[in-house]
Structure formats: structure tokens, C-alpha cells
Amino acid sequence: MLLIIDGYNLLHATGILGRGVGPGDLERSRRALLNFLASSLEEKTVRRTVVVFDASNPPPGLPQSERFRGLLVRYASDYDEADTLIEELIRRESAPRRLTVVSSDHRIQRAARRRRAMAVDSDRWYSDLRRRRNRANESDPIDSAKPSMLTESEVEAWIKEFSESNATANAVPGEILEPNKGSESR
Image (cartoon, rainbow, N blue to C red; front, side, top):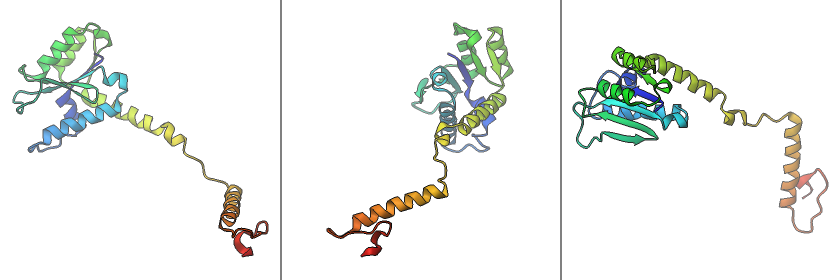
């Protein structure tokens, strides 16, 4: 693992969840958060990330864990709360100094620091991730590969080229075209 994320904690920090929770809203909010993470993190980080959600009253058929676009998603259905599962994951980590734990919960942060892992508040981590994502989008090589505008002389040259080609293509077999007059000779 490289990154452990307290899912609902981050979900609230992002504002994705909103105020009211109706039927299916929680599931849609979780998926929106997971999609954001999967598209914002580097691929190697995605594969080494665990997002933990509380699941004290899980809907029927909710798995204990699943892969979502490379992210490992864990539901704390066998735990009193997600914090307990997160603490267990921190304890089991073989290289805790390389681990980052994203949660604003002080209990989780203390558990991470005890193992010398980095603990980051959810809102701060989310802001940093959005900033990095925006910078990456600004320097997108696809944008820099866009063709520049043609100069006036280049436009004239292309018009001339295609006008002559068009006149030749529309010519009647055996007809002799005068240079630079295109189809006007007909």
C-alpha cells in the first residue's frame, strides 16, 4: 500500500455528498469520488491505494472489498467503524514510512504517526490533488500539439493549390486549362 483514504471523510471534504441523502445518493456519491480518484491519481498510485468506507448497515450484496478502476475499495462491514479497519491496515503495513493516510480524524492520524506514516487532513489532501490535476491539465501535451494558425500567405498557397487541383479534377477530358485560371476557361 502507498495510500489509505478514509472514504466518507474525504467524501465530505470534497462536497460531493451534498446535504440530503436519498435512495441511491450515497452509492452515486461513492462512485463519483472513486471516479475522481482513479482519474486524478497516477496509475501506479491507483494500484496501491485503499479507500475505506463505513458499512455498519450495508445494503444487501455489498462486498467486503472490490476493485474499482484499479482502486481497492474496502467496506468495514465486519468492524464497528471504518476507523478500526484503517487502524488495522496501518498496523499491518510492512513499510509504514512510505504510507500516506488521508483522514481528518485525529484518532486515525495518531495511529499513522505512531507507525511513522504520513497523515494528511482530507480537505488539505483534496485541495493539493485538485491543484496537481489542474496543473497537469494545463500542461497537457495534447493541447500543446494543437496546430498553430496559418499565416495569410500559407492560406493563399493552400487556396491556390486546392483551386488548381479542383479545376483539374472537374476538367472535361481533353480540355486544356490555362494556368492559374482554374475552371474559368470552360
